[in-house]
Image 1: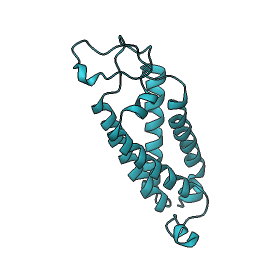
Image 2: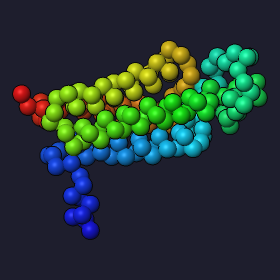
Image 3: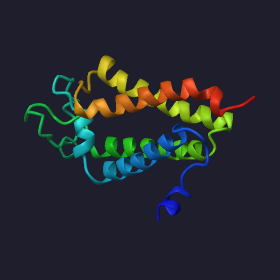
Image 4: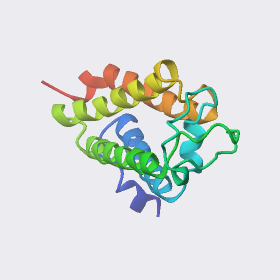
Length: 162
């Protein structure tokens, strides 16, 4: 059975291609949950100190989270969660291609960019917009995007020749 599982793994040396595959699979699951529930997306966003949305926002879009007070509406709406899920799914497709074509410069660069964009997004939501704060919900995406970005940057010459 182990040989049948390993036959699906990327056929490249090193752990980076396997990591890209793992993150891709986890990201697909994350995308599905973003469509199914707001719970996990609300763990990343919904800083209680963030500015409130306009009073004209429809009340059905402002479902309370467990960390919000009744006066502080949720920053995560069904639309924003689905948009995040779609963005995550697109990134997972690019990373999946990179896992199996890691020696192709353009695919490698696209995968690298997915982590750069993710890092910039999460950092700006934390440091600029204040819609999240450091904690369990933010730590995972920050560690994965930062670590993967650095790892890919350092391994460019090993995987991409020429």
